[in-house]
Image 1 (cartoon, rainbow, N blue to C red):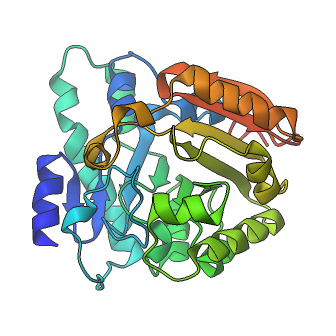
Image 2: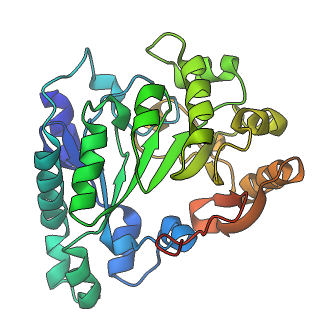
Length: 305
């Protein structure tokens, strides 16, 4: 764990125990008025006020080939997770430390910097599976006490936790149209991972929170059988994000650049999904190689529902 933490610090992560924070590229761009994250465009989340973190740094039950995580140095299981209140306090402190240098940068929008000092949106994802954090539901409640909206991004392998939590928006990553590709691409460290993802999809259908399925599209691997993706999703969520795998981080040791689809290829796949389902393309962001599809009348902008 110490070796992992040292490497993460070199990569400019803020680390406290098993909690990790990292500034998103789009947060930095937003502070310089150079653009916004697709989440702001799609859902109204302000990029410069978004805190990207994980309460379970580098702890995951998948070893996905497309993940930028530094999984090569992780062995065994980790315990002694911090309590939710400490995680919230530490994550805000680390976020402020990481953005502090922007105050003296003449390129920085100072109004945005003052707002960024008090983040109001948290993306609980980053480099670890958040549902492996044993107090995730309590953590979400603690962030809400601090007036945060909460996005949770999960691989869906802990269906009981998926059933329990109530974030502002819940993402489930669907990495494959079938079990065979899933096991080769995600290399699960748990038994019956595919069955558990399917259980989580069934649970998602019953949940009333805002729900998203994210398709991480890897060229040459899982950009096939759109009808099987639609069958698996089974109208269980409000939104589908078709998003390209990005050739970044430690995934470059496992994948090749040609595995990263162009935006036009992602859009073409999204059109195939649209043609055979009730989901309709409602937005796209070329820089992030992502297309948004929606079913039903859920308001896209957070707070407008």
